[in-house]
Image (cartoon, rainbow, N blue to C red; front, side, top):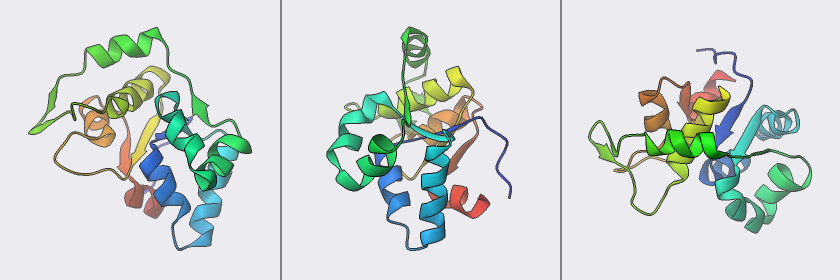
Length: 143
């Protein structure tokens, strides 16, 4: 499976940390190189998490500018995302999945996330909005 040609991919903190902890150094190198090239970013809604983890901060904040800044247009998209995606509801205390998906829609980016569970993830939301969305391991397999 080949990845679609996207100008950039958005990820979340949990996924970025998992990617940087991958046992294959070539995968880690590819993730870091994508960030350096501006091809992999995170939303500023999670900047505190990225900055509070030294290893993630080193690759996503200190050495590169890998942050995707949100704006009012993204807030409008977030407000129009349904509260239920299929059988999954949004987590009541976590807006980041909706913000990441809305940012991907607004900027024409893809989504990479390792989050899974009973609540709707950015991948679930992205797929419902016709955004190229991959789990971390599918993304790595396609690199």
